[in-house]
Amino acid sequence: MRQARSEPAAHAVFAAFGASSRKGLNPARERADAGVVTMATAAGCGILGLLVGSFVNVVIWRIPRKESIVRPASHCPACSATVRPYDNVPILSWALLRGRCRDCGERIPVRYPLVELACGVLWAGLGARFAGSWALPAFLVLGAGLLALSVIDLEHYLLPNRVVYPLGITCAALLGVAGVADGDPAVWLRALVAGTVAFVAFFVIHVVAPRGMGFGDVRLSFVLGLALGWLGWGYVALGLFLGFLYGAVIGAGLIATRLRSRRDHVPFGPFLAAGTLTAALWGQSILDWYLHR
Image 1 (cartoon, helix red, strand yellow):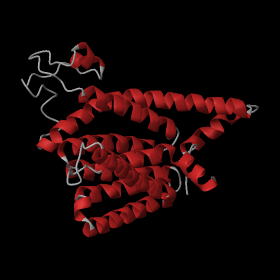
Image 2 (cartoon, helix red, strand yellow):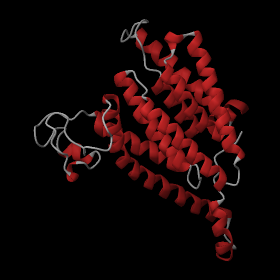
Image 3 (cartoon, helix red, strand yellow):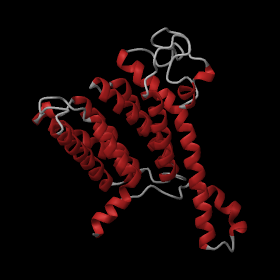
Image 4 (cartoon, helix red, strand yellow):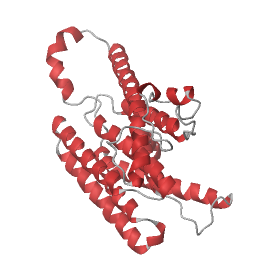
């Protein structure tokens, strides 16, 4: 089982250069410096995540409708008025406009600022978790992609190939770069194998119980196994187990409260995404607790 590297190969570039200046530093000072770097990374990723959250909203709205995510520019769905740059500031613009379009007064769903906030918080957490790791870009892309897919699945009961395939290709490429940069390309091969194993397992489940899982979940499982496999086989087992656990518990709760019946379809993608992100962010602590309890 492998943890994300806290001191990747990139740090070696600066090792010789800064060796003399670091002589005499005590462990407490080194931990404090590492803490500052982690906080700075988390803050930077969090701010960037708010901005990326605006793009995630575009993906959530346009992809299910088979529209381009590039053109036209952001506009009001009701009156087609182009959104002004000063009305496109994450969270703040929605609050200042009181949740309405400046031109036609149509309500802007609260989902928009919530997605921006969720993306900012998620990226901050990933920034803190993978600070100093070459794998950070891959997990940031994974977080944004899973957020978009989760909302789309909740609204449309759909995991679009136009999101799943680019997400998988991008994560695989970024993790490949990370493996080379870390001087450990074998870990990338393990990630690919883990993604394949997850895909085969979900495919078998889909064949055995097709009503319990859509094929979109099967395709997504490769991406999840890929990312978790980069961290280690224990993370793969934990993340997928948590996805099924979340689905079972929340599904049972919805049935118990009569918000859903046993015949109603409940999107599984958000639970898989939640399980994967839980494992990526806190998997080491959970696995340590389980193995040493």
